[in-house]
Length: 242
Image 1 (cartoon, rainbow, N blue to C red):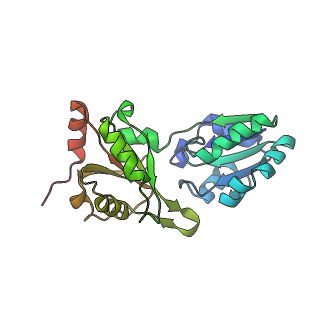
Image 2 (image 1 turned 180 degrees about the horizontal axis):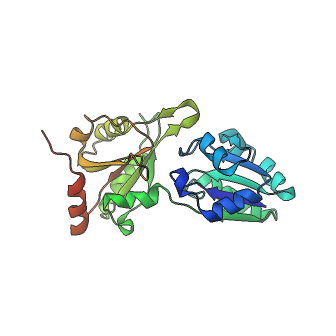
Image 3 (image 1 turned 135 degrees about the vertical axis):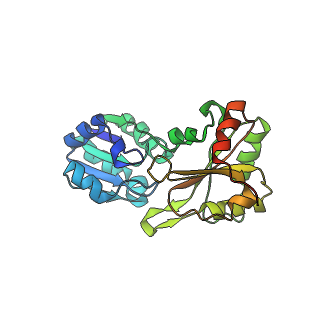
């Protein structure tokens, strides 16, 4: 049996359902490259089992190894946030069923849930995009933003990260990328959504880029056409021009 288990944004987000499934597992992997969350020590202390760190090489390129293990015993893959938000893990859902390996998905909260704390309505979001580290010649995020804006929809922009190397694309770098590509609308910056140090700000890019965003993970939202209640909510996070 294979368990895909969402950890949520913090250790307190771990559900009773998830804990019960973890207790059934003979082997546990922590996928540690698509996002960040509670520490390995926190998890070990809570579940009292050995945890194997699993990077991109194992999760994406050696999927057969994990699926074969799941034929013989209970295997759990712990994923920060929700396990099916990253497209990588959808492959496990599809391929396990193809080869007859039983699979159970334990969902949890993710950045998509907490993005609504900005006051924006989930129904008004369009396609999500992400900005990679080496983005000088990358146009896809800009095209997604512009297409969403054409039909009045908000754009959630995820920022690249490499937790193993403690490397993160910052909001400041992402805002610079947007400005260089003629995106000059007001936007929302989000830091550590769903955590105690959550920080949300709304304003012009030229004002936001001057700020220091210290904590991670970080993301940006480009609002589309705003409902009057969304406008009201964003005033709570407004950064005044100087």
